[in-house]
Structure formats: structure tokens, C-alpha cells
Amino acid sequence: MSTSTVVVRQRIPRAQANLTRAIATAGRPWPDGSHLGPPRRPGPVEVAPQAVHDYLAALTELARRRLVARFPAAVGALDGAPPAMRYAANRRRMRPTRFGTWTGQYLLFDPSPPGRVALVYGDLTTAERVAVLVPGADSRLADFARGLGGHPHRAPAVQAANLYRAADALRHRVTVIAWLGYRAPRGQRIEVARRRLAAAGAADLTRFVRGLTVVAPHATIMLLGHSYGSVVVGLAAAALPPQVRDIAVFGSPGLGVDTATGLGATARIWAACAPGDWTRFVPGVRRCGFGHGRRPTDPAFGARRFCTAGVADHDHYLAPGTGSLTALAGILTT
Image (cartoon, rainbow, N blue to C red; front, side, top):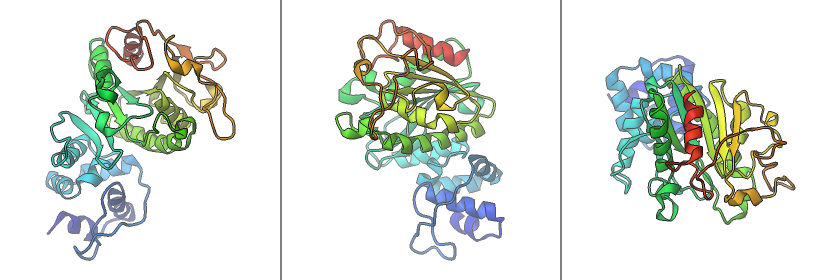
């Protein structure tokens, strides 16, 4: 009997039945429960990441492998699923694509344009500190590893690797995740001055982080937002779980509010902007749906500041040898 028939047909509690539907809505369609005919997409169902984890962890190893093999898109994107399942599912999705030669562990991979991906450095299941880097405008799957314009310092995968190495040198059991789980705006388009895409990304980021608290229950979490990614983090702040201890933004056009307390977060708020960063000239206003509010480096905002020594522009905050990389690694590990 196929895995899908086992999961859908057996008599199970409503919460578990809903979970099978949630797995479907996380990715590709689920087959009809009564037969293995043409696939259909059930209505969306909200299931907490903890319920997802508990259900999947209770399955046999064989059942989990079958789910991964049959529904890699669904399992690979399912927040709360055991990391090993998501890594295997996303690796399976990657193989037939032009990204099949990429190495690493992926909690998310969706090649549909503009693409979504989340790359993990370190052992998430034993981590004591977890950092999630949210990149900004113009971020696309195609440039995730090589960098926009072919410049490695602009690649989220490279930036996260730099932070991981710097933090791991200070403290073991650190994990860093480069999360491109939202549709980032194009830098030269009007959407970059609006919050619509950031709001959608904030909802996905919140669920992703809640999933992390399930699979790494003893870890504290730090969110890092670069450029427009800081808007995503700012809009998510009020809904983040208490395990998020620090939020750090750099090269930020604003967080959608005018003060740190306006974020409604329990985390410490950190901000930095290098002297040569063009975002320091972005007006710190919000009017008629445009703009992202007061810049977080404005003293009136109330964020803690950190060093930017050696940062010459908008894109080198996580470059080796910079004061900002050292500072962020220190915040993550203390």
C-alpha cells in the first residue's frame, strides 16, 4: 500500500487528518483520499509546527522515508518537520534542477521563480544559538550562492557562512541559517518603498521561526535583517516567540515603526548603518503607503548600536575583517 493511502485512509483523530492536509498545502497537491487518481489541492489548514513535529516524529522511519520520496515539495517546506526529513526532501527536489550540485543542508527549496531557499550551517538539532539572516531587495534563488552581479559578498549563502565561522570560533553549538523564504522586491521598483511584500514575508518568517523553536527547543534565536530584509523582520517582530532574544538590522531603510518599543518585541533591538551606506539618505518617513518609518539608527528610535568599522558600503556588513561581523558574532554567542 502506498504511503499516501496509509496516511489518508486510516482512522485518525481530526488533528492528524488536518495535518495530512497541511502537508499537502505546504507544497504540491495531495492525492484524493479515496483513490490514487488525479491530484487535488485541499483547502488550507493551519496546524502548529509542534503538532507537525509530534505527528511526523511518531511515524516509523520507513513511513517518514516514504513521505519524503512521495511528497518532497510538501515535506521540504513543512515547518516543524524534523530537519533530517526536510534536508532529504529538499535534496531530492534539487537534484533534477540546475542547483543540483549545491552542497549543504536545506530547510527550504522551491525553484519556482523567483525561488525560495533556506541554507543551514551547523547542527540545528543540538544548537544553543541560532541565527536567521533575512536578505534584502533583489535577492533571488539564482544569486543566493554566487551573489548579485557575481559578487560573493552579496550572496546570502556566503554572508551566513562568514557569520557561522566567526560565531563558531567563539562558541560551539551555533547554527546560522540564510533564509530567502519570501519574494523580495526589485531594488529599482516602487515595491521596495512599500510594505506589501515585507508583510507577506513576515508571516512566513514567523512560522519558520516557530518551527525552529520546535526542532531546536533549547536554543535562543537571533534574527538579522539586511536592507529590505529588515522590514520583513520588523513587521514580524511582534508575533515572534520569546526564544528570539536579539534582532539586529543593518543597512535598513526602516522597520515599519518609529521606535523600538513600537515593534512590540521582547528581543533586544540592534542597528547599524555604515558611513558609506546609501540607505542613510532614505527619508525616515511613512506617508500614503510609502516609506518604512524612522531609520533604526536614529537615536530617537531607541535601538542599540553596533560597530561598522571596515564597512565601506551597503553590502559588506558580514564580510571578514569588519567590525560589524565581529560585533554580530559576539551578540549571537553571548
